[in-house]
Image 1 (cartoon, chains in turn orange, brown):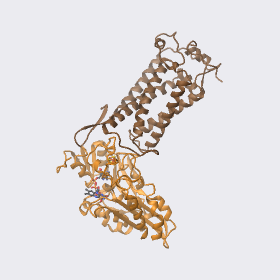
Image 2 (cartoon, rainbow over the protein chains, first blue to last red; image 1 turned 30 degrees about the vertical axis):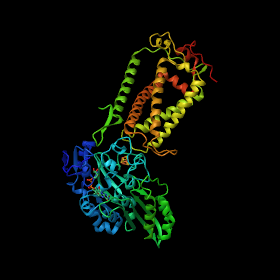
Image 3 (cartoon, rainbow over the protein chains, first blue to last red; image 1 turned 90 degrees about the vertical axis):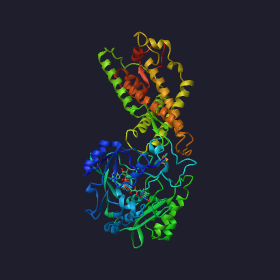
Image 4 (cartoon, chains in turn orange, brown; image 1 turned 90 degrees about the horizontal axis):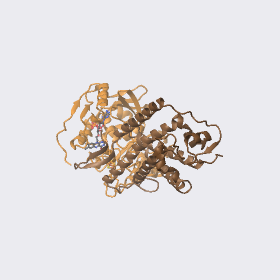
Length: 330
Length: 252
Ligand SMILES: Cc1cc2nc3c(=O)[nH]c(=O)nc-3n(C[C@H](O)[C@H](O)[C@H](O)COP(=O)(O)OP(=O)(O)OC[C@H]3O[C@@H](n4cnc5c(N)ncnc54)[C@H](O)[C@@H]3O)c2cc1C
Ligand code: SF4
């Protein structure tokens, strides 16, 4: 399959209000495509693997940009805020260093300059069979190419597979789930909020989408509550290359400690299932324990419990366990 | 509107995906129209006086058969809802519920078939020349089952067997507690299986709609009652059946 340098022929809409964008997206339905920074989108279009008839470009909608403090000590980040801004913003770095660290590990400086936080959490999976335009389950077909004896599935899921074994590629998604973020979604029927943990959708629930966003929905903002501000954080992403590469496994962790003892914890792994995977058994096991090597050693194996590796990704299970050890080592 | 769904793969080949779900709306519309036409016709037709439910109780369905009927009914409803709701945009984790209901239906059908063949009188369900006189001759009454009931049963049997057969093949492709998912079938074979599974599902939706409608019609409601309590009255028996062709025992 060839990739083209030129964009396919399609209509371009550049609304200046969210209401107009939502109305356009609703009217266009599955023929339309919401465009943010384009870093996921342009790959699809250049490969001619998706064929939208019209783009709804959000870049002219000012209210979707920027980072502001909210009442109650939280922070609201507009969906069109670039990953560079998120990773460099003083407020985010001071209160939610976990998100700043995750955003700073996305792709490359160029992509972070252009890619947005909203686009990063809404991006599609990177399974190459699907990205090449094969008619697999996720593309509406009846078969999974990755999950076969010969399938190249080194990067694929070890949890939560249901016919499709693709993983969520978003680096910021794990941090947002760990921080108990809320996603603000607007459509022609109004505004509604969804917890980050419920925003991502596995193949058992919907095999053709990665998030709850449906045609006509615009993600307008991401709200971070004060609950997890100024906590102790740990973010690590293991990838084949340090830049311009997706996670093989990543971890985003937040701890609340008192006199050296963990009072509350969030640990979320990326790239092991189709949604960011909260390690709830590890979270429960570390409460009341000190954040140190021996706690890490004691609970690490819980991380990969129940994993079902594919032919080429058995390494992900011990990698998860090790990342938990490192998160607790502090 | 498409009847069958194809997709062009990256090499430009057409891949059969299955039935087009646009047909769901066609089936629902046709069923609604058929029901409405029947309601209108029945409103204008002079209906005979309704037989009384009082008097002796005659056994129509043994408890075990009623049990099978309702197990099959519930599993068919669960299968239809879990199969179709995701198609119309209601998202939930449907696959496990779907195959569990499918296995229950399969087991119920196997038991029902064995019981019908060896412990009941399968002849009561056969369609013979006499049955075709019923619609045209008010004096000809059916045995245990009318021509319409036999027709419904046989159409339902064909569709349920098709949906179970194709469903079991698809079941072999997914993760279960007993085996791991497999990609043993090629895309075009799977496309055909999905086509038959989807088409029989659509057929079942139409038949179930009609079946439920007739089960709720006032003049047929005593049959529905008999599927719950097991009996029809002597009066209902005499008014609707030929004792020479079916003479049930008194109900306990
Ligand atoms: C070479 C390369 C390497 C990469 N490496 C990484 C990596 O290491 N980690 C990582 O996380 N990502 C990586 N990515 C992916 C990319 O960084 C993210 O996809 C980027 O953040 C997407 O943001 P965007 O604004 O460009 O999204 P777009 O491409 O514009 O949109 C992505 C998707 O989200 C939808 N969307 C976007 N915004 C909204 C909104 N507000 N409301 C509703 N729907 C919306 C779009 O319709 C589209 O489907 C990489 C991409 C490339 C090309
Ligand atoms: S893993 Fe999912 S996206 Fe990849 S080939 Fe299989 S069904 Fe398609």
